Amino acid sequence: MNHPLQHEKRTSTGRSQPTVPANHETITPEITLTDRLRSGYHRIWYEATQALRWSRGTYREAPIATIENLTSTQNRRIEELSANYGTHFELRHPPETTLLNYGYLDLLDRARQALKWPISENRKVCDVGSANFAYADALQTFFKPSELVGTEVDGHRLYCNGRSRIDYAHGHIQDLAHTHYVVADYRHYNSPAEIITAWYPFVTPKPLLAWRLPLSLFDPSALFAKIANNLVLGGTFVMINHSPTEATVAHRIAESVGLVSRGQYVHTSPLRPRPQPVVLTLWHHS
Image (cartoon, rainbow, N blue to C red; front, side):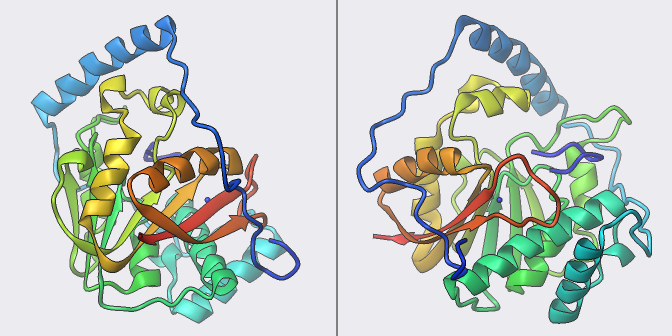
């Protein structure tokens, strides 16, 4: 879930150590009275935007050819990614969106190498919780899909400039082939895919409330069950969590719906500093 101007996861061998114990206790999230009051307020605004479905049409951010104020390490990594993937995000996006895409591509690329993750091109990719889909370019570049679909439950959210998420999303995917943006609650979205990605799904209620969403949308078990149902046999679910602690919670939920972890990568050297290391986990059907 990203604001349009504020975008929004090893050891010496390169392979991460497990962050989830084999037998872990069920974690029950605490929901306070204050949380419920906040949720009621968020629900009013959420339902209002759903009813209004406001859109002023596609909004395209102006690109910039160079990115300033980068460290030498960041410059080297971006040059490496550009050379390896034949892409230059800065020619299509403004600085913040450009760095977001390079950051996501950096994580995917390092996880691919660390986990020896084979990537098959020309597969359908579906992204869950895409916000304004500012990172669609990175997914296109990495997966080279036959079709890319971004889904977002709050796609009609309004920004302070009078534009909505769907306006930004259509601008971000305007030049990407076979790419679509769907405003939908993924818990009720039926569309099979060979690869499903979820960047920072809500597995505890506090982050959901921080993104101004009502608790009625908080049901990670139902969300993961739908992901498992939509994932074709032999397909891969790619989940990214904000921290090892969050990954532990997500791991329990994913296992409860029949998904099996096939590898986990802890990103300790991100393109941009983060308070905690992001965790990427690959999942398959049991």
